Image 1 (cartoon, rainbow, N blue to C red):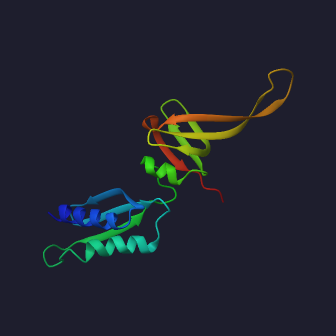
Image 2: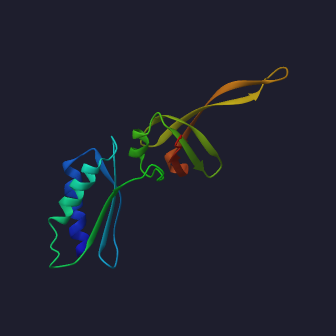
Image 3: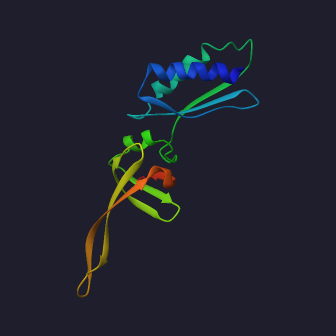
Length: 153
């Protein structure tokens, strides 16, 4: 019952700000409601507070005691949805598929696939030495086991 009420309130809150979208939602047996959101332009503290208030202010603690946690997908969280790839175009990603590990700049993202580009040093076709080569790989989102943004410090 608490889970259904919280989900309806969450969906209403997300409908009010269409740049936000749900990554994860759960209600544990001890009535802890956990919500993880992301946004096309990122997620601000105000976004988390607005979603939290939209849920918390419409649930009655007298009926059921609960705790509520609304967070944004962290910078090191895996990318799960196609929509998340679009917001990360231009950033460096590490992508793991069944057959390969790729690391490159995300240059395009659609509903079905992404494109990574990177430079690598390869032996010259003729003679000694190496030459820098631009590589490009289109990867089906369905084939991706894990994808994360590579953070630079």
